[in-house]
Image 1 (cartoon, rainbow, N blue to C red):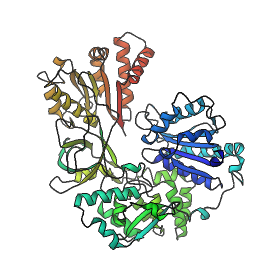
Image 2: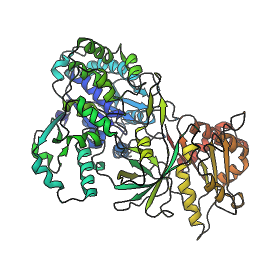
Image 3: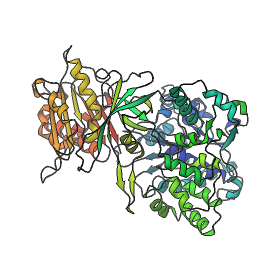
Image 4: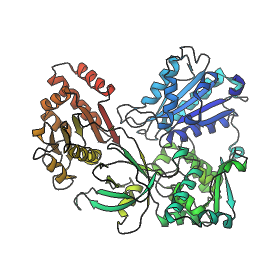
Length: 624
């Protein structure tokens, strides 16, 4: 078995694609040092083989509130088996690089616990774990580059056979630049059309979305290419005053394909449409034939029969459904590859500088800070003519966007509702930018035919039973999942006894952005599920309606005793909203309340809240 592992294994666990980008970056640098390697996603890896590895590098992201990516859950469950001994990984050298965001309380939690578990099982770290931080001026690359320098040096001391020419002798990039990871196969149009000739519009769209997204090399989960369903928007309502400065919308969708069952607290992923003009401009800029039919396959896969059920799609459809050409910023490697296809000397020099360690900070200012899109970058370097297979490999994949569901299916049988902040901002160079998905949704007209590809999945907020008292904290659009919670409990209260709900909401102004004001107030009166008469309550912090700013944590402290009484009765806490400071500030407020009302030290209060979390009664769903 050891003979099969005479290569460096690089294994990544990704949720949004950043960890796979970082793993590919490490793999490219290993290849340039003539190091034999295997690169694969953790969901493709058999964890029972780990003890046979000679050297393995893990690149893992942390999601939500310290959660492992979905692709890592089976692997992590295997590692936690009690029958694995402290010498199981004896002789296995490993390294861990984590991707996280230091604005979250559990910064890089997955990388830290993986590193500890591998060491507990007898593994030997090659270098100290590396921690990439989204808050760094250069993003995770700010930590990755120096970490890799140490990695190659230490790995050479342990496994010199991995580097036949030493850790500092690099293969010229021109040797590798001819080897994109994917191949494009063009197809005869007549044979393709037969696939669609008898299909309905909806079935045709389903086939197109599923086929295009299954072909793309950047897909993170092979079984999630085809949508769970299609939705039609039937309501598009503004929730904020027009001159408020924020644009928050209430969207209602109906199922146009089979209805999917969902619970309150679940999450809806939506595949956004791209601007037609931007897609056309990209195709023109890259001299592509939009009407050609293509399939995409990994270069290593030489057997064409392995394409099997892959249905060819129009090149334009493939770009539109899988390649984010006018929203996401390209990675540093995109600029590196561009430099090989630039025919203007000044453009090549600038691209080489951007791709170098010295140019990293300037690239960050030009690219990420300005949210420069692929189309904008290509237009800034007009002499570059990149082959389509390189574009498919390097253009960021078009990702679904996740939204907390803001309805109860019990109240809205054939519908699902969302509460969405329509994102817009101005870059440092005063360029106007919009969020791709939120602005696309806001522009949809319910009167028009529209099919929205959608996927449902569980989030961080499990459905509570009717008998469980709840303390909900949801400022701004954080109220979205709790609209569904309140709707469902109100319905349950008509036929059974239900436990009380305390809900703390926050916004800027009573007149500007008091989202769902009538709904909350109606349930807070006349013995409603949010009424104090029922043991609950509804409390609002208007942060800008007075000189002193007031936030949800201030309102919580005003209700300190009532919160403690509910906690003592076994209440569960649910927190949703912005990931910046809110979850930390609210958690601190809960700790202060426990310390004050239970007359214990702050350390004991912190442990009390941690115990609540371990028992499955303290949940946070936060987003940036």
